[in-house]
Image 1: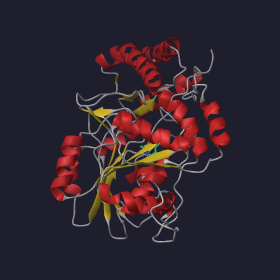
Image 2: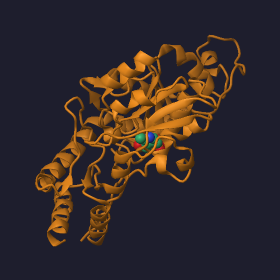
Image 3: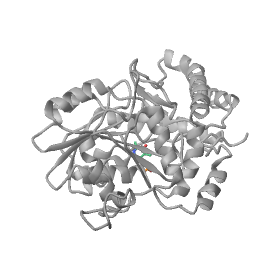
Image 4: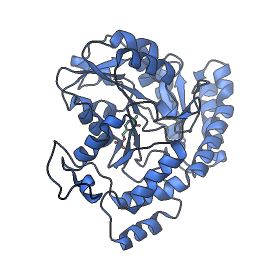
Length: 378
Ligand SMILES: *Cc1c(COP(=O)(O)O)cnc(C)c1O
């Protein structure tokens, strides 16, 4: 049987044309023609008024961390069950992380745990829309607003998703997206910072331009550009933006195909959930689905590891996901919040299944049949 990889990049066919165009135009550093076209796309489609394209989502989070002036002694709340990049930009500034547990019905952070983690030193709440499925933004924003704490949405996986009818990325003071090759639309490596709180707009432009007012200079607002603040280098090359724009133009068919595969997985595996052999992803009524991930949650670690090996023997690449950050070699000694039961369960019981645009419905059926066989032959 052919190997079914976990992921495979998809190209629309226009990527190289656009890179060629950018090159011919003679401007391939940041803020070129294609960066502007990507910005327009997100403004038109999702109402993101102020976006800065960055070399990665990690960089976008670092920029947010610098803008919030995170410093040693500050605390930042975030889920434990997330990618390490959610945490490192804040740890780099000296913050202590207060890790929050996941919900019992799905891996997003449990909004009911937030209030207890807030202290006088809390400087930010970072939420992660796991698998592109919205966190309960109404409940989260209400706690955050009550305590006047800025929210950052790590929307790395959430392009095109909504909470009720509002696009994810529109709730937090900042939100960040990833265009890494593993995401629904990508440019190899790339990211985006959405700035919803206007007070940060001007300083964001300066910090990402090495601490200079170069952006204002290019707009003709200052006669020469000077070093005016701390900074770093956070611009996305227009070569990457050109590649990304080709993908954005195909966002709708890409999402539609992923959703078709996702729905097929769900109906092919639902019988196993009905027999209580495993759990399938739960999409709350307030959330839409961009089909970034399909996963199953086994009853225990033995089932999960056994199923993973069984699928690998059939040439199907299914893989585990996050290893809870509160229990990581780096942070374990510093974590003060005790056991986070659900984060641990998703770490040990969750298995992600192959899902990529060029996957066929037949391949999804083959994966689902193999999973049925695993439970039949046990
Ligand atoms: C992919 C991902 C990131 C990191 O994105 P990069 O663009 O690779 O920096 C951060 N957070 C989450 C939740 C992700 O899935």
